[in-house]
Image 1 (cartoon, rainbow over the protein chains, first blue to last red):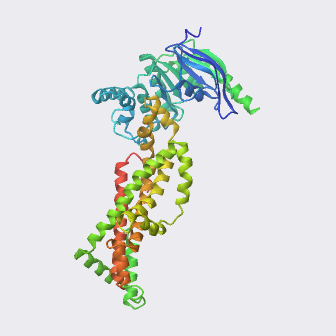
Image 2: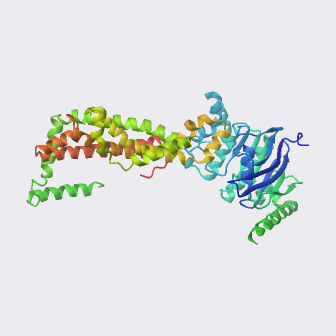
Image 3: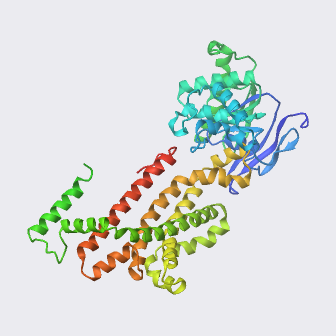
Length: 257
Length: 245
């Protein structure tokens, strides 16, 4: 069973500083090319879960395996896009995007070609020589996405990448993200606190409970969301959104009580 | 326009001298200080002293920047180094460095070496502290981001920590420049045959107050220009960072 799965979390627990339990016995099997969204109340450890898969942290108990091999550290095969402030402020957009290519020792000409291709992909033409602080939040996240994609990761980890953006920019980037996934299918794990975002993007939606973070339920989205905005009118979309919202609300209220 | 208050001060000074309100024994008139400065410059007398002083200050500062940056980075990255260096640094910090000049002369002689050493030691502290703080403040996210894009652990220092800390290091170096000039002059008071500090001290000793003040004015102007040039250079070199000043 576990051998068959691509990315597998087995009884993962995480504790910081010996006291607070951030994650508690998380078990989840993810197939190749799934788009998993992870949604839950704030402080439920969803980002921690992503950092464990990224290899930045090691779980206190249990283990994370990729193709049956335990994850022991970060690697360019597992690209990550953070919520914000992850660009290197001293590098231009061009150099930020080519960062991973430089680390791989790819030739200048080849780097220029790949960067140009990704600049087009995330619609940043004309901004190549600007510094991160000269860009809007939405543009910075496009750069971060391009910076991750040039490394050709097989898994894309996204830690509330659009969380700090305004509603319109977020919506546009969500559309682009889905298009990207449909075009060049990778396995995506996408953490969000936005229920609509979770439903619009995820083929499977993981709902987490409040601290200590456990998996409350895993819901399969059993209808397609095509390009465009017609899904908004789909009653199944509305129903799923509402169902997930109720599930999270229960958690939020449990904390308050 | 920005220098209007300074101009006003010079006018007040000159007026006070001319009306006899300010006797020349207390402060020579501004005009004779300027005249003394003009003759020091036109005769070329001041230039060898300028060269001697700034060679010492420059050498001391350079040593402080090289060793200070290395030490600050090492302290930020290696806990054991921080633990062993920090108490020493904190105890050096409040010492008025010119007070160590006689000791350094005993150790290193009365020539340039002891002066350069005192300047270097005085400048070291702000460079180490700013480098340490800058390197410590580097966000984990940037380190993680680099590692997830293939940067090996041993390359993080060069690839992320140092560039991220540069604005803070540069601010520490700016403080160090000011300190270098102060200690340079102090060290030349004590024993020197060249240098602007020597010039100030020897003019003061023979009662040539106008020439003495002319050198002070000259030093002030050079110090100001160095600082302006440094900040302008930083703004160009570190264009990615929004400097406050």
